[in-house]
Image 1 (tube, protein in one colour):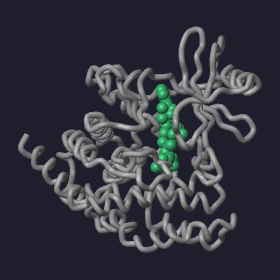
Image 2 (cartoon, protein in one colour):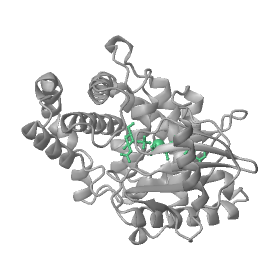
Image 3 (cartoon, helix red, strand yellow):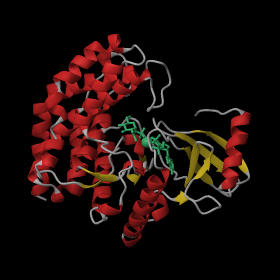
Image 4 (tube, helix red, strand yellow):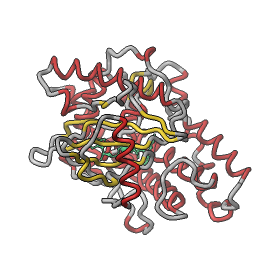
Length: 370
Ligand code: ADP
Ligand code: GN1
Ligand code: MG
């Protein structure tokens, strides 16, 4: 829990008043997100999540909040039809007193959600992963009939990995921080994987992988788990819900959830993968979303964690070269450590790729028989 100074707390309370939130008993930093500044607010009568929105990542806040309100309205309708509590199973935006879904002060933008009681996890066992797979698969199903034309692309080209490679090359060339020399091994690794970068976008271009409405940021801590039942009951962080491939959601969840060490672990010996976690997640996801998958999507399932881990690695590397403009960092070489970690994970996944393919086949067969 990140404690704030009295002055910081007072400033946040003034912002909260713009949302009609008073009698604040406590406000402190919350969660492990890399993008926004997130605070848990406790008042005499309710709890809220307040976020200072990262406007480097999300330049058009009106479009961002419109997406979130449209998506949550759709999800709430589906949840109510299924007899589930819409206030517990998806986000609820708490609007400002002027009716806007955010409040802007100078160049700072704030928004508020109702707080949902639950556990955000950074590590998972195979059963948690199965629950996570089911939650993201179900999320996918609930959005299957959402009109994607209503959605703005909140971060254009978000999972366009070849474009991410181009951006990396530009940052290497510019080398504004003079950091290139310490990254040469990672740069060489990235360049040697140019084919991997194209693996999904090429199939989308050929029409073999369809665009769907996807979450695009399926990190384990973007879910809430019920500590008693271990069900993953709520999908959070809806900022990047936009047209994408289901493979992005599958691959990104495994990027994080298969890793046996944190995303910024520096000790190479500790950076490993859990194939049981791979099987667990695949079971949950395929059970919920498997029937809608095309053959090409099924074929690419085991490759997608390699792609998404690679992409995340080169994004951290690019941000390190650029001077840490995008991801929040806790120390000067944080993005370098994250990049090194992610590209090490890619190597581990490459070594295990044949087994991942085999597990996927087994799970798809289990599912087709049920
Ligand atoms: P970031 O984009 O920075 O990751 P998130 O929207 O994911 O920001 O929020 C960061 C963390 O805050 C989440 O991982 C989760 O732990 C917690 N969180 C976010 N929204 C809620 C909410 N409405 N109720 C409970 N916890 C939340
Ligand atoms: C960010 O917002 P958060 O912390 O859940 C990032 C993801 C990365 C992830 C790496 C909008 O996720 O794309 O995969 O960090 N989100 C955005 O941990 O860029
Ligand atoms: Mg998050």
